[in-house]
Image (tube, rainbow, N blue to C red; front, top):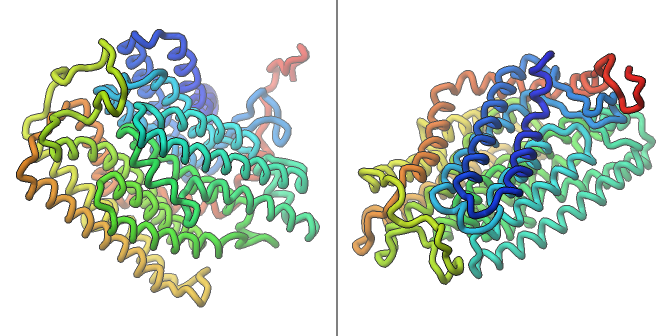
Length: 540
């Protein structure tokens, strides 16, 4: 990457940051203006993410190293773009623009500063995907958490406030663990730059390496909380189901941030050398426990929101289990599963609100009531605003069926392809990396059973909602609400059609991650721009 395209690396951070700053100073009564600013920001972010994805595909390796302040690593702040981070940026932008458009129907008007918090959340998530050092990972993590606190509480309501307090308490504890872990790593290694840290670990004395691994373990717990690994996951189903539909939709990417960081650090710092395999057993058994817990939760859930929340845990458990296996072929399928499950769960959270409108004969609109959300002001959107969809129940039923097929992993959609890629790789490679006490067939059976549980639960809820509801009414669904859901599900169809190209990209990405020297050399060899003033007036 060179020229103007090189500066696009920082754009996923700057675009939402500038948009949030603009939105803060716009009066809350100018909702249309705020919505347009936020929407333009999201369109720019999606465009930039798509360009970066096309430029920085797997075969390009690590060409995208951006030196902030024109200071070379490890002393300056570094942003690193590769196939994995480009994929996560595009996935985040796709989910976020769908959630934002959905919120414009009415949710963005249910509280103050919704758009500002939404943009700051994206800034924190994108920064975490791009940063090349642990300190700035902590900074972006905190920005993301602070924005997520406000978004979860958006709309008020007793249940939402109660779940929000639990969410805040748990994530504040995770942030504290993050800080402790980073401090231990810096105290033993003397650096927080990921590339520099990976280069120093093999030469560490045994006692210092043990202390560094202890810090990495504490740091890992913070991200395992975010990923929702059992037994650190009890807050997640309640919090996600209590959030408003667009907020829950964009929150689907947050658990994947924890997965991303664990994957990045595991393959960069602990893929080889004296610390090879560090934490893999915890990931394997923790992933299995999370998958079992999520499967039981799906079977026991009667409410659609809880069902979607436990689906997040099933997705996280499957991915953590694969990380514990530490096999490249299985990890490639897991990346495809990560993308497919995130799109599906995000669409499902937003679809749930539309489906549940038909279950209350006394309300033909979303349950945005005076009791739950306080006094509505004169600018709140009226029920009659917008254009409703013809054939509402048919469209909702089709989208619901697609979500059920994707979550259960039935053919022919991308959920099946991703699970088939993982399971076939497990059977083809045997039990590589799997302890004898946990044979590979146990993992395969767990993945299959989780799909069966999802199918049973979705079928049960679907029959109750679409077939046997005698008192229900046809819900009033606006075009602006159903189109985002259809957009995300259309992306899963695109993944299905382009499964071969997608798997090739995932294979290349995993092979690149499996060679840490590429990352280390790219960051260390990144050169400053000659002739640029360094702040002293002398330049380089």
